[in-house]
Length: 368
Image 1 (tube, rainbow, N blue to C red):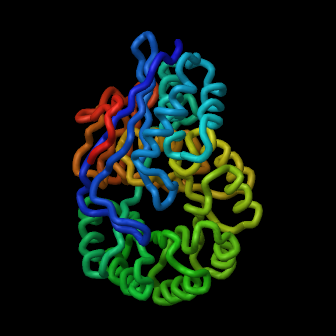
Image 2 (cartoon, rainbow, N blue to C red):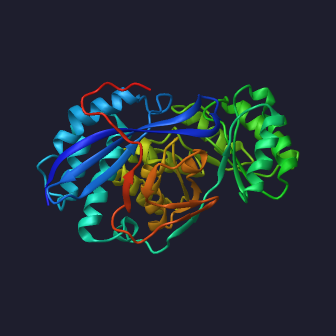
């Protein structure tokens, strides 16, 4: 079964409420979808969000990388040659990790379809259910308290609290959230906003007040590994690396230095399932637990992450709330999201049948 062509499309979905972090504010999901087609009518799908503040990619750059470099390198190749296809994606262009991740998803989707297996089984997994946290955007303490109450009313019991914008308010934010959710698991994400010493001071204050924080994600700048290690060595709260870890090499460096207690794997950062599997192998060697996370993504790419998480025991924490943050789900098939619960089916590949409202970009400029 050969790949005979490809199409790119724009998937759009409004968010229930604006998504705010120390890095950005977003009100809609606008993602590029890639379809790889075969002569016998099979379609493999992948998805890439523009996250310029993290990966450096925009809608235009993702489309250009896929259309001009990545997808043409796949046309004419056999779906059964999985390793060759993934190598072609990796070598087609430098960087562009989200675009590469989308193409890899589509390749793995086709390969699993050809094997007539759901992707999680192809990856060696046995479980079919996950429980995700829900993100509370950074806002004033009163708004975050209301958002926390709303999340609890939807049966979420693990909250990922965004902090870091105006760090002077962070302690008050956490007090408000903890008062509204005394029994919830609370993890926080500073999105690189703190200095190392500021991070340790804030985390000391949070724990001394009994706020009981499970972990802190990316407290310092992405490239400041010395600062990350300083926080890990001195913080009363376990530290998770996120933006500091893109590649398997990044993972090895962090793991060897013990610069973080946990690592957050996102397909959009590492460039796809192949590199995610390498990071997981390294984490298993060092006995480090992983989180599976996502950017602001709809259900195509998050379904791929769900399959990976269901296959690998080193993934012990799940932050795959992207589809839950959207006010509508345009994707037919894929993982089933019901509040905090995520369920996979045994449909071959990713199990995605189509996307309503997908606007194909057949040579037309993106306009949103």
